[in-house]
Length: 414
Ligand code: 5AD
Image (tube, rainbow, N blue to C red; front, side, top):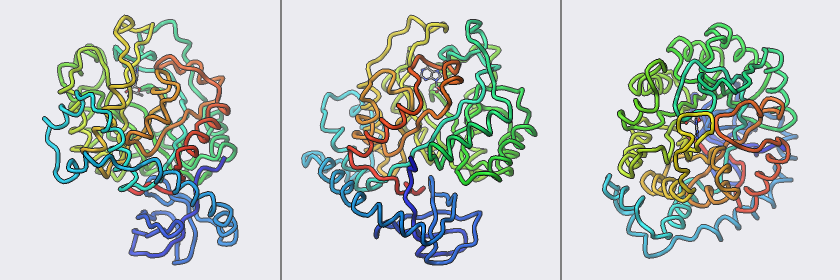
C-alpha cells in the first residue's frame, strides 16, 4: 500500500505552496524542501513531507489517473444533497440548532453532512497509522484500560530500536506517510529521550510525525517540535468540567484547564492539532456534546478527533452502558453541518462497536481516518478499549472500504 497521490507544485509564495492533483488544487506548507514549480511532492495534512523524482511521479500519476476519475464519479454519485435541507447551509448554527440536530430522528442529516463534505473537502482522504509504543501510564482516567490502577495489564514499552523498526515498517512496507506515535503518559521517555527519538525518525523517514502522549509539559512539546514532530493528537475528552473531574480522579495529572492550555500551546508552536472528545461517557448530556463540538471549533482544531466511549472491563466504568454507534454518527454529522470546512476523523474505537463503522462514519461527514499500525505482538497489550488485532488484514480491508465509497488519497489541506 502507498496511500498517497503525488501533487504537482503549481504555485509558491514563501512557505505556502499550491499543489495540483488532476486539476484540483490544495494549499500546503513547505518547511523542508527546495521546491520549484513543476516539482512533485507528497503532502499530508497540509504539510509537504516528501519530494519525488519527476519521472517517477509522472509514472505514478498516469497509473492513478483513470482510477482517480472513477473514484470521483463514485463519490459524486454517493453524495447528492437531500434538497429539503439545503436551507441549513444558509446560516451559521447556534448551540440550540446543534442540540436539535443531535436529538432529531431525521436521517437526512447524514446525507446532508456527506454532501457538505464532498462539496467542501472533495473526495480527499488522509490515513494516519498509529504506533502504540508504550502502555505505561501515570494517570488513572476512569474510562481508560491502560490506567495505572489496572494491575492485570501486561505493561510494555518499545525500546528505541524496536520503535525505529516499527516506524520503518509502517512507512516503508505498509506505505504510511503520516504516523502517530502514541503512548500512555509515560515519563520513562524524558523530554530529551523522546525528542531524540523524534529527531532520528524525522532524519531517517519522509513522513508527517504526529505525537499522542498525553498532557506532558510545554518543554516536552517544544523539544519534540524542534526535533521535527508536526502533529499533536490530544483530546480534551469532555468540555464539561464537572464530568471531566469525575473521570479524572485525584492523583491523575492534568485538569481540563491544563489540557486545554497544552492544546493551545501546541497550536501556537505550529503543530497541526487533532483534538476532540468522547461520545457516550456516563453522565454526558446532549447539551454537553453540543458544547464539545463548539469547543473543538473554538480550539481551531485542524482535525476533529471524536470517538465513542467503550466500557472496559478493568476500569471503574465496566458496568456503564455502551451507547450504540448512532449517537456517534449523529455527532459527526452535526459537527460537519456546523463546521463544513473541518477535517473530521473516523477514529479506531468506532469499529469496535460497529464492524461497518469506517464506511458509515465516512458517509456521514468524516473525511479522514486513523488505522492502527502497531505490530500485532504489541497491539495486544495496548488495551485502551477492547478490540481485535490483525494488522495487515485490517489495513487492507480498510483501504478497500475507502475505495468502494470513492475516496482518494489526495491531501486534505489544512
Ligand atoms: N473508550 C473509548 N475511548 C477511550 N479512550 C480512552 N479510553 C477509552 C475508552 N474506554 C480514548 C481517550 C484518549 C484516547 C487515547 O483514547 O479519548 O484520549
